[in-house]
Length: 112
Image (cartoon, rainbow, N blue to C red; front, side):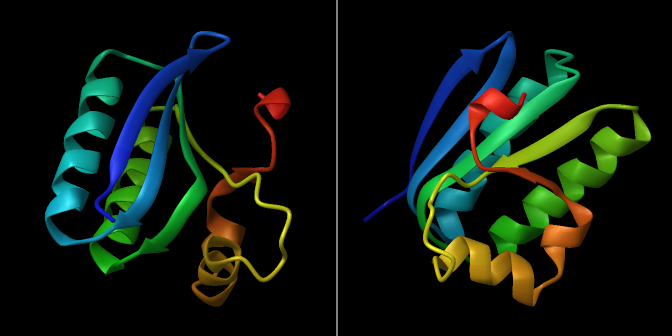
């Protein structure tokens, strides 16, 4: 399944929802969408990984890069994972890489 990226706004915050597998060529699409949201000057951007079932190292690299870039600008990148399963791929990936300690993660858009 190729990656589908949906862009919406919640409380004037851009939310990029990734559905499927974030790998190789698809990560370039993700990077361009994230870059576009960043260039529009958003002070916060949410990446919704609730329906993402795989993220490769390129995808993680994009997330870490924009988190660092935005933090330097006094802005915030937020990761949403509303999957309640504690063994979900994204939750385990972030725990194993310690990104759950580096990135702000939320379980609901109500937390914005």
